[in-house]
Each structure stands twice: as structure tokens, then as C-alpha cells.
Length: 245
View 1 (cartoon, rainbow, N blue to C red):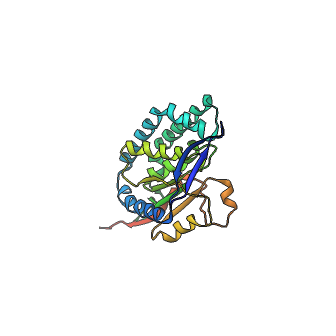
View 2 (cartoon, rainbow, N blue to C red):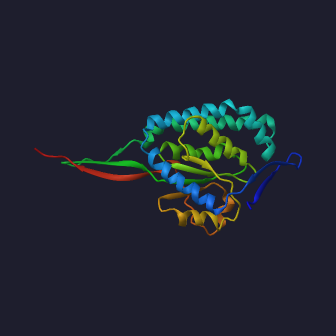
View 3 (cartoon, helix red, strand yellow):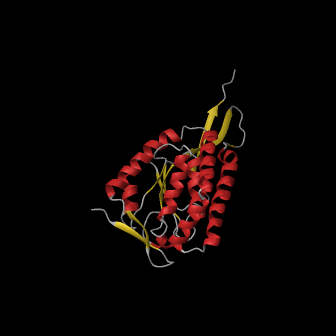
């Protein structure tokens, strides 16, 4: 029987939302689907990826009032401020989309006679984003959006206090036309020593864990922290030889 996650509203102490927690089989299936979907998504042009991501932001904005209301009840932010995080989600997303061409463009290195030398960006694979409860919209999009634009697939895990935020983000991208399993959310418990390690062990493909919850960092877990979210596109040096005639 699945464990049930209950989100208690700080407003009146009521149970605002309940969700079944994913078991190991469901986690394994999600990771496998994400890896398969990522192969096709990485071949989609950056122009198309940007278009889908832009539509997702439009969809998300169109549900601003509903999302703000849910945010208020889940984590207690006053309703007059809750809509502001939807705005910052959109603003940050559009900025990341606007710089994607420049940031992901090949980097030309020093010249050498007879050679073309440059560094190209390649997606890392499956990215697990662990989002915080206090800014559950603005913070995760800083990782989710660059990861998707760079051609990765993403599994999003939100705090037990804000599960609907993860669902609304995934719903917006799905409605915008993002292929199935490229972005998923999983509701998982806080046995941090178990499920991320299981993910890392199970994945026969590149898997990056991006942790945005400070308390998790005190656990003995192999978590990769990114100083720059655009490192979600690995830099691969390439050298091609010019044919001399």
C-alpha cells in the first residue's frame, strides 16, 4: 500500500492536499522513461525547444490566480504577494529563454593552422531537481528551464509542503506540447539516504542531481551542485581537421 503525503495548511491547520508517495518501482519507471524521452528531446532544435518553453510560460501565466491561491494555502504566503512569484517565475523563464542561443552556442577556441577547434554543448541526460518549499516556483525554474532548453529531461521533486507547485509546472509544459516524460514530477518522502542513491544506482545513463534544499546538503549523499545552471549543457571539446589541397 502506498504511503500518503498530507500537506497541512499553515493558515488553519487543515489538510489541504493529499498525494500518494512514489515507491521504488514508480521511481525506477520514471527515470527509465525520462532517459528514453531525453534521447528524442535532445534532437529537437533549440528553436523548437524555445518555442515550447515559451508556450509553457504563457500557459502558466494564464493560471496565475489559481496558482497563487494554491500557493497561499500550501505554504502560507499572503495572497496579496502570492501572485508575485508567478510573475517572477515568468520573468526569469523568459530571460533564460532569451539567452539560450548565446549561452548554448559553440565556443570558438584559439586558432591553429589546419584545424577547426571549438567546444560544443551537449545535454547531460536526466536531471533531478529537488526544490525548496519557500520559493517553490521561482527557485526550481532556474534549473528546470535551462535543463530543458539544453536538451535534458527533468524529474522534479518538490517539498511535501508544496506538491501542487510541481504539478502545475508540469501541467503547463505538457499543455504547451512538451513530449511525454521529458518533464515529470514525483512526490517522494524525506528518506534522503535512500531514494536519490537508488536513482543514481539504477540509472545506466547520465543522471544529475541538483539539490536546492540546504538541509539536504548536510546528508552524506553524492549530490552535484551547479555553480551555473547552464552547466546542464556539458562542454565537449571537438577538433576537426581541415583538409589541405
